Length: 82
Image 1 (tube, helix red, strand yellow):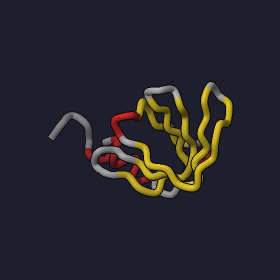
Image 2: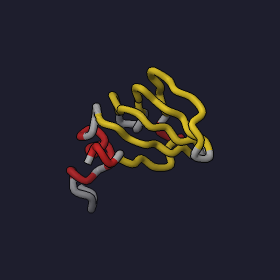
Image 3: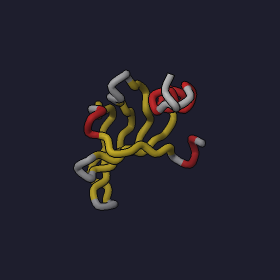
Image 4: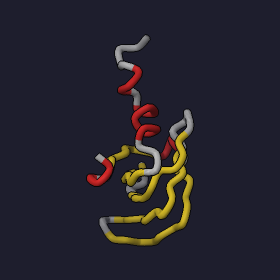
C-alpha cells in the first residue's frame, strides 16, 4: 500500500462529499462552483447547478456540467460543506 492511508486519497475524499458544494479550478483559470453529484476513477466530475467564474467574475450558470479530470488544477470544498 502507498504511504497515503486509504481514507486520505483524493477520490475517497471527493466521494465522501457527494451532493455537497465544491469549487473546482481548471488549468485554463476557469472556476466552477456547484454540487458534485458524480466522480469516477479518472476524477471526472459531474456538477449540478454550476456557476462559471473567470477572473472572479460570474460568466455563466449551467444546470449540469461534466469536468474532465485531467483539466482540474485543484478542488476546494465550500465552507458550508465542511
